[in-house]
Image (cartoon, rainbow, N blue to C red; front, side, top):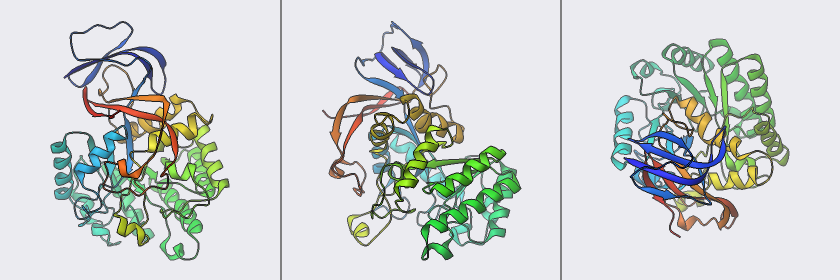
Length: 395
């Protein structure tokens, strides 16, 4: 598969110039100016060419909850949003606690053929909070374990899981919430468990990734840990850096303006490793009943570009680092840079054009978004996977 993109503004984490990119056999072969090849060619004058996006926190709901989403619709939503790699959570039905389910999901993703994926495995077997013997049976295809949507309440069990993960070279991804405090104060529930999970990482040496950080205090704990050299990374979501004081149901909840300001300041200062969507589609009926979650994978780039880059907080290079380069490095994949030898996974975006977010246009089965009617900039016009156009915006 060959593709030449010409006359684009080429932007990744470390460069920003006008030029051309040639992809051969799915890999970026040459980057420069005035490139010529006898192959399919895109004239990208006036558009920005960036690495495709990588999402560390996604729910595609299959197996078990395909009324909310399935792998095919999830993949279609991903490429519409500019993503060609996702990290899928284990809270399916049955929970992903073995290689049989991992293999099923990855096979389905390959059959759809639009994106790549990593499938997380639950920290405890079937989310029972006690048994971690299944962790000994995982192969090298599993890089991350996570009790997503929950947390492991038993400290001894979590500590032992981190020791196993450290030994096998896996990351423990934490949804930090102390359930006994959730009905008392969700802020305290997140803060207490963030501190515990970091302390366990420091004790074991296990790499820990803190999901959807939403409070100032939790981020302060992470910054302190990073300064001490603890092996911890973290992510924030678009909705937690844009919304405040909102009653839209997500978990963790939308926080206060002070938290939003602190998270954005932490992004500016380099403490935040990634922006992840926590794409959590629901049926309208489930959302009306109070299900927590947002369908975010199709709007994340535009929302973050509008808020962070057009808002003057960070550069476009920094946004690419947060949404492409850093997540790729955490997953140990060769995406996220426009450099020869890297995967030919790119997006073409119109940074000047604006559009209105409308849930009814989503490819996802879930149309649950608090950003309905919001005007945003930075529309993904094409998504390229291994040199092949897998999404093209209808104009």
